[in-house]
Length: 77
Image 1: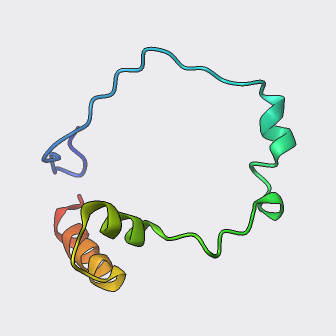
Image 2: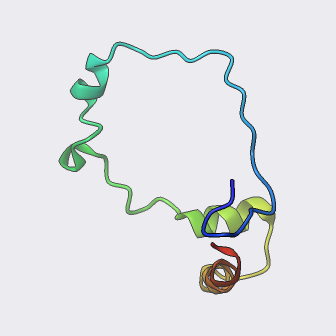
């Protein structure tokens, strides 16, 4: 799993027991790949707000972003 000479600190192993798919035509009918058909999500919280709320973090989205940038710059590849 090493990439560019760096081995990851951890990995996820996922075992899929069953995969179900609805009629593939529903994907086309729903317009999943056509953004003009998507509902307005402007009032929806972003990933940072969700992570902060879920983990009960005491930081702003901007602080979380800065932490992610700092960590990513030192641990990715």
